[in-house]
Length: 325
Length: 312
Image (cartoon, rainbow over all chains, first blue to last red; front, side, top):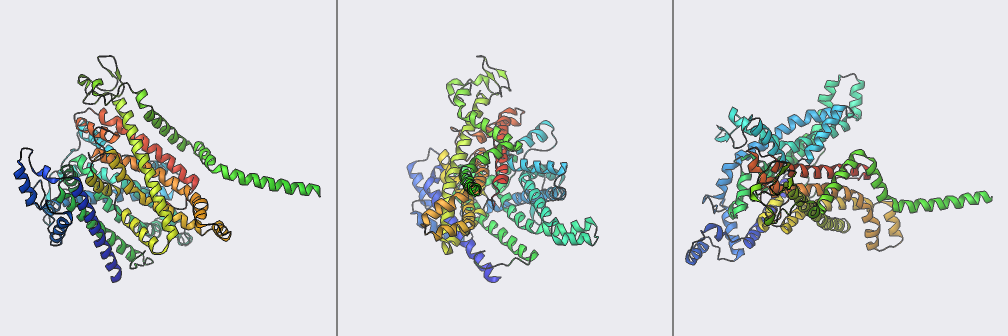
């Protein structure tokens, strides 16, 4: 177990390093941030001063080394635009994104699992076919366009739900959250559902496949032969064993929800870190771009690791091994 | 006696015929099965019509939507099926600059399909080569390559695309690069998987025992048998690439304004949506939706027909 953790840690560090070099050198080659920092009326002298102040006159490897030294001390540099530490900016906005992603995940499970079970138990019924058609649509619908349509219907035409922003927030353990106020909830509903849509389809398909597979296994037949009622079979024998593979996928999907929140946040003007990165890319705010990517890589690695460990706990047949899987 | 011989000859002949038929049939059989499946046929028709429209965009459109001389700002934001002062009928309305939306959609469809196909094709060639090489090399090389594939696939495509577009900037070539980077790993994994399965089959052993060269075994025996699952993965991936490109363009980091795809058209209409002018975003979105649903329907049917041993 500890050798496993160690190898995973090493892998994460290598990924982080490769990613930071790639992005750093890449950004270094494309744009000159001086143009972003200065107004067009700046004199060449002012220009030189700014270049020197930010260390932009140094060779790229030296700049990277400076960046790396500072990064290891927890300083990823100041945003060119906001003139605040990039890390602070991201941590300020992270709660909003995480809340959105979590609510979307919960929605996907609450809606997806029952529908998936229904479709798996009676695969030939009309309702089940309807559910499956919906899931194919969910895969094919461009999420961002559905977001627009939802705004059009629920905000513009019906006027039921607000189209943008986060609404009232309450501090929960020092972190502002929306889901505890009525206004916040109304703001959360559309974006969270929009983000969840794709995952609902996925959960439906996975649950259905799992249920159909487990229903044919001997122990389910045996439980039936013993005369155990169908509800108990479903709850104890079928669901438990269906949910195990679901955990892995769901865990990994949390990461993808955080990444795809970029799109949803842009549409619903949700003040999360996805919106921040899109704006940062637009103005080539290097420190923010780098900080966002590094933090996301760390988050992903942690999520993947937790999922793997959880999986080995729920399903003892799975052994964690150091190195290759 | 002679009857027996005749029968033998006949049976040998029919076996030959069978073998010959087997060699020509797969493509034809797949197509036939596709056409017989009603849902797949619907997908096939939708996609064909859209591709037809995209290819013939310059002929079918009432104006060149990107020739500013043909645009009249007075015609801006006209609702669907309005008539301009010069008598042109705007079937799907116009955008804020008085551009006929139907023409813009046809041109946008062109860009979207082109970007999707080209990126998928490049990713397929690169990914399949790496997958094949990985399976052939085995051992540490294989483990390392598959580890890279695993790591890459553990990151959502949109994040990888964001990184590359942040570095590369905007442009058709750049978004194609970003899409290739996000997709090669799927092809690599698929091909490597089926290549390993095929290399353990009896016919590969037979080929080896006939002392055929590695090259011949790989390209004549193993690769062709990796094609069915590859086709299924490729169909799904093209749809995904088109959707991803539209998403990125919608976010304003994909294609430049000079080369508008469907995603950019939708994004243009976004600000007018809130004031109730729905059509500028709505129709490009419906087109995108039909394209993606169409491709996915074909892909779904192909998966059943070709029954690949694993999914991408």
